[in-house]
Length: 175
Image: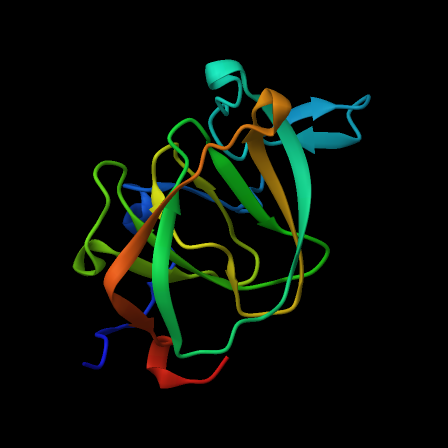
């Protein structure tokens, strides 16, 4: 049986709201908080993160991503019940595909949604949001703010998709 194909939609704040927030600076003409003797404007990009839940602590990691080939067959998703995560392209524009489902019971493949970033967008995943691991469209680093537990405890629940889900790209173009 051939898996169903899901084509990602462009990432927007409204469409992504059930799963978290889009992290992108809209370059406002004004606003922000002046700091550094007025030489810098500080902008809050996302609501405060809860990284201390269940004795966790925040860490900033660098993920050296390799571009995936599309169409891609997703065989599993994961969730972190206690952990929020922020993914930001680092150093240059980088795109990725986000495969997500709302927090709750393990999702069926039909419940998953896919989005593609524009290269400048990052995301904040809410704790418990089901997602696939990083599906980079471009090689290169991503800065990831995430929660770790003392002693290396794991906050990662995996769920096999049965049947698997095939992910294409918008317009059927190759990555």
